[in-house]
Length: 126
Length: 110
Image 1 (spheres, each protein chain N blue to C red):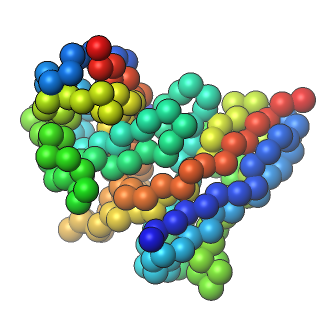
Image 2 (tube, rainbow over the protein chains, first blue to last red):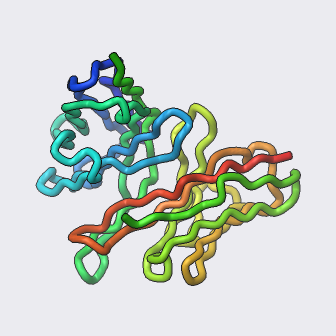
């Protein structure tokens, strides 16, 4: 059974840091691109970041560039999100999601998600 | 930045057909994907590549795309279908294909 279990959320002051983890099981973690997607309370889904299979390629939404870092440890089947310089507007449930996308003929990789974790809540407040 | 536009809400009676639209300038060349999210739960993929249905998703869920609009259709709506629905596509105007979500549509079963 595919499982994605996020952890590491909590209450942090503005300007602080948190490291989220997503433990994967039930599938071959190393063959999948992985993502972080967030959802502010009562709001919609917003893509945050993605990482390719071996961790050599990462992409970020503009609003987290320079503050967040995505990484993975394929030996531990774990995805990470290091979040620095946190702001009140970063308050959200953070989901990790498994990608089952594809490359097109021009070399672009197109993502979509077949499994999501249950999420971990990050609250940024003083 | 690229946006996908969904109606905030759609209401239907049980047994009727619900249609949820997603509009975006790139949809003529990009696939649309649809996710269902019930309160307190993670999203679930219900349609991929415009019209394909993952295994385990009921046949009453279908998808289509024409021009700049993708549509999720739920035929014979059941009470359990009440949820938020999000479309997702891609913005490949830059150096990589960025994931984009619509704002979501709350489906209410009357």
